[in-house]
Image (cartoon, rainbow, N blue to C red):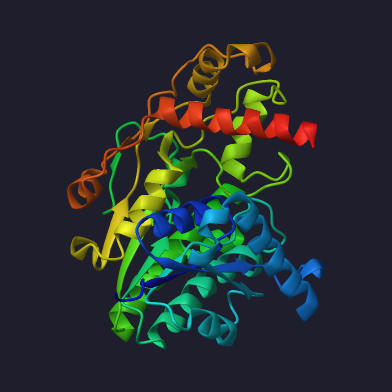
Length: 357
């Protein structure tokens, strides 16, 4: 029997990263799971701290998924712009999935804090893949942010597809103090950098980029506090727990379930139709008002605490054409109702367990 193929996944202990790790194992892969921490983070200083961080991630995963321990090798990369470190981490992999990228709307310097790191993280991952001839295919988690014109807002007359690109320029992003604009621009520049690399360097691997809008779904990563959820799930938890006093504005009405997104990352590794292709990945539209009503009906015992909502849909908005994704992968999107019920169920269960601990 031939050994299982190995896929390297960076950001593997995060919301999307963990979902990809679990899906890769499900599809028969061994995983090199990279834990990433900024070199400017005091908690990551020194080899003993790095080793501890790696071990903590491995131990947490083992505690939650003991039956999967033998399928995962945990590695630590202090900085995704450290070419030598990433080259070493990628050794032995047959495929690479690049997930980790700066996500924040707050920064002191747009260029230094967001734009350059997003671009360099991507370049370093691609160079590492190019220097490891065993790697056959790379998948990059891009974003709908790399597709949309954020300044046009809901733009009801527009239908977006993978053919569209965010029109923001580097100079505009550098000068902007709009956190959402800068973040969206960073995703555009990072993905453009990847396609430029493929065109100019002509590496031995092929590339797929996936562009999801809001990503929801049950958090599968180990977590020890409901204050440490990823951004999109935390927005839901603020509403389900009633911490939010009013309904959050639905800034990006498109969404996808994290499990569907993970499936596409792994399926793209060997799907010949996905070679050097870009995809818009979306299961449909939603509003936070609708999410609360779904959760309230599914968990009536929790309903009184939830943020008041009428279930109003998002205002009239753009359309999203993901027909290419459906055609090439044959995917059937997870319904929003299931995504919300599954997510709320995990969060309420976690709350009870953490309170009892």
